[in-house]
Length: 136
Image: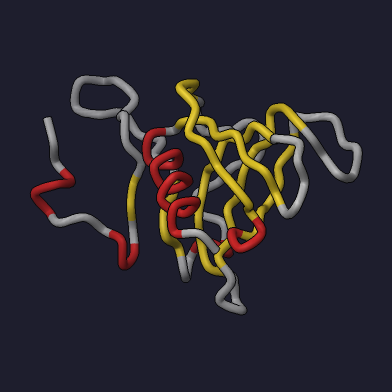
């Protein structure tokens, strides 16, 4: 697993930004909206994504939900395009699998000015210092 891939995906979740990524040894790219990064019961890091474009080994036509094992992601690139959390497509931050081992999850709330926030909600051991969480 590349720490660079984890940091890129964490930034994508926090900023609600799309990513282009290659999975396993595949040369074709996928475009995903990463919603949550968490450890499963076996301790493996999983990224829950809504795939909106690109390759599918199973031949599925996007869009669809897909969990990706972090250790199998060969490369990831942060894109400029942003996304809104896919509640109507089934995303729920209260899912049982996120209750333990959650590293990062998209934020859905409005900020004090009534706008969608730019950053996601970081949780767990990667929680930034209190001063860094409340930037104007």
